[in-house]
Amino acid sequence: MAFTNEQLERYSRHIILKEVGIKGQKRIMEGRVLIIGAGGLGAPAAMYLAAAGVGTVGIADADAVDLSNLQRQIIHTTADVGKPKVQSARETMNAMNPDTEVVTYHEWINSANITDIINDRDYDFIIDATDNFPVKFLINDACVMLGKPFSHAGIIRFQGQLLTYVPGKGPCYRCAFHNPPPPDAVPTCRQAGVLGVMGGVIGTLQAAEALKFLLGMEGLLSGFLLTYNALTMDFRKVKLASNPRCQVCGSEPSITTLIDYEQAVCDLRDYHNK
Image (cartoon, rainbow, N blue to C red; front, side, top):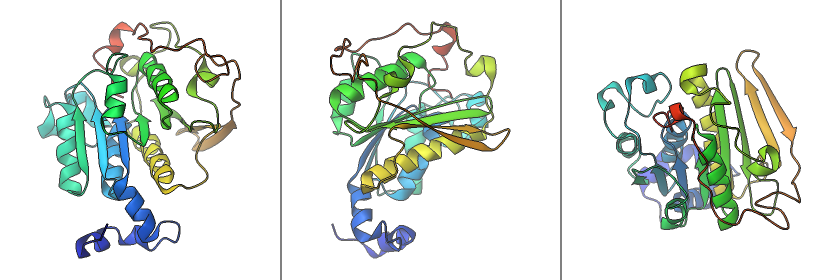
């Protein structure tokens, strides 16, 4: 891959980093990342991956832009209200960097389509940017079964968390959290609220994990849960252990097919809103 003069200028701040350089920027430009959810977490992740020059970014989301999204979902504007989120996201990303191919999937993610979507472009890394426990477990299970690394994250009120799963190098999401909570047991975006910038803080960290993975860097959050409290400005990194009896990544997995868990009623409309 030969760089154009425009690309050398665009990515110059990457290229001068000894940890990236020309070879690293080529790896980024050849990389393929799938983002599931074009809301508060997915919006900054998508924008920074496009800015970095990731070659292919897939975005899956079936929702349309709503006025209440704009407090945190910075990839969309007032003029985008009513537009499919994946379309709005693609337009913003293409305007930022035409080098990035944006592939859109305007559909709900479920057990019937997640494998096909992940395999569509043989994505290197998956970003879970959803606000939906059933789908978070679905993403985990699909990635474990397909041998795909992914970044999990969640935000609520003034708190956020994230972890990264790398096959064979640490615990999966189920090792730590086992099963989804019962429907309506945990407050949703509408019920609990969220400080808008939380998506920016945590979603940007997910983009950083994706870029570090594409570059082959050490220091991924594999085997750790990183939590953030915006009220106290505290980050906490908690060591996680693999569970040899994990239902999906353990030595004798009991979950061998993908499961669509029951969703909380008020999550259905706000499936990726957070």
